[in-house]
Image (cartoon, rainbow, N blue to C red; front, side, top):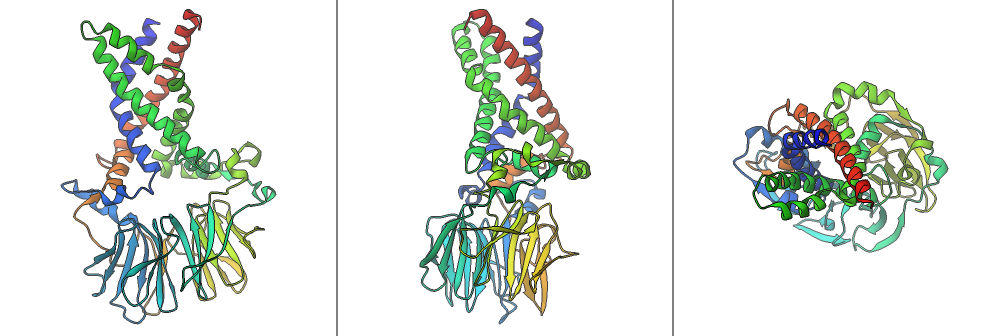
Length: 443
């Protein structure tokens, strides 16, 4: 037991600081819909972090009547330019997840419902106070997805809700294998076990427990080395090692292992894409996907949703049938043509009732931009359009850079890997020590 204690102590002292940072930043990153993460900004940061702000943009539009008028929207709000993108002014502070044009009006999906711009300023139209993560517009109607779960068909003029529903998919249509690359990401990002908020809450539990274990471990070590701190140390030992903290080992093992895989996603990409997990071994969330609406489309007669399994279609928002396989990250309608941006899946197009692969387009593009008679596929990895520039970063960007190690250096992922491996060792030795003590005490 003495050797076990020493191994646990040394591992904790070495990795505790890194694990605390990973726990705190991971907790906030799991809740990337919180507005204060984007309204809180920081200056005087390393210059290489400033470029990370571009990934927060979600949509781009060029006014066909005036190409110098451009609109960029993202987590920091909606920005407009009147000089071709040289200078931008923020016109709406709400998080924006996409812009759609319908007739002479523009519509934005925000964290405060749907906003409309019709000749003047942006004004709230419908679903106030709700997080609209996806939006489609067609023939005077808007189809909105709220928090990836509920669907609303809204009148584009009055904002009245005409139809409401959810994606109750037939379980037989979801019995498909999934690639290890997708499964690893779903587990790490808090959407890979159960439907709704359950997976995220499990991640939260693991993150908060890890933050306490790291901080409490250092505090306990300090108390033990203080004279006359025996009583306080015993209290902290009980707070440090108990059933709640030991139970956190399950989500923490998942987070540690998947984190190592994601640290080396490029190097391990071929392997993870080549391994598939059969449906019988997948967690319950893959049999329902009720809270997995990433994109929507409406063509006047059929509703479509995009989730991690592909595109599903319905005529009444009640009965849904699979239409095209592969993660449908975003969907955009241009006239009678539907463009689908894939996540870990090919980009594709629905034209003339037939689906086909869309080659030579950026992976996970976020918008389809019409300009100079051409279509451009807007991607924050290759914007190809002028975006707003900032001399500060959001709290979200800081959290992400600390979590993936890019705040420090490209090689920092190896420090994260070592910390993750030491976490596995800490969980093993800590659980064993707790179990031995409980057995000796007869409890």
